[in-house]
Image (tube, rainbow, N blue to C red; front, side, top):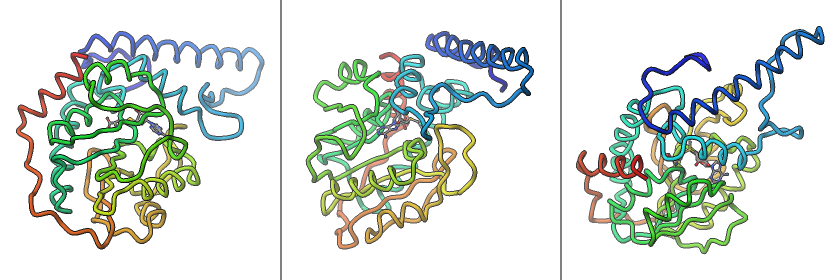
Length: 284
Ligand SMILES: C[S@@+](CC[C@H](N)C(=O)[O-])C[C@H]1O[C@@H](n2cnc3c(N)ncnc32)[C@H](O)[C@@H]1O
């Protein structure tokens, strides 16, 4: 779908805000293009206002603006070019994938502590709660959605910022980075964050991470494509599963090689419970 083309598949109230944002972006690009033509310079790809002169992008500003515009919508945390229903469908299917992955490493979330890095609109917060996570810390580079999250999850903790510069105690039994690492565009920064994840993981803990699993040139300023080998190298010494397909990416679990599998397996969530979590996100 071309930017600016009306999305007839869009269905939620937050679409109006999202379209406002797209329209503003389009107007800004059009003005730059007309300015360039008036000056006689050839049309060129207009840099985003979020791109920093020293390289990389201002992630806090980009995600803050994006979350403020889309609010709870799955198009804000998912794929904005797809409808709310399509995103929702993919999120619901993804729950089964994570459950299978946790079962593969014999990890049962009930009663465990969790650090969820890049918690977004709180969909996974709700799923982890339904799985029985007892202590949850959600981290996000922006606090733009924290009002919704704190309202829905008064017993959970939310901290804004990026690792490693956060006051977090080690010993998390589950650490998740779902659909986040590609948005940390600098390799050195991501390696440092993964090193810190390793330090925060309990000896019996499991780290779940999604990734593109391919190298290709950057298509968007806010995404870097990396192969699985980047993650295994950054987390060298940890055991890991094979990557399994997850939405448009892959997911794998890392853990201490001496970790003992648990006897109790994770119970699959009934579809009705997953949909209830999604409804709560959309109702927030
Ligand atoms: C594509 S969204 C995914 C959100 C959620 N995990 C999900 O799967 O729905 C990426 C999230 O990561 C957050 N984020 C981006 N860079 C981050 C960083 N360095 N540390 C923590 N959160 C970050 C964004 O604000 C956004 O909420």
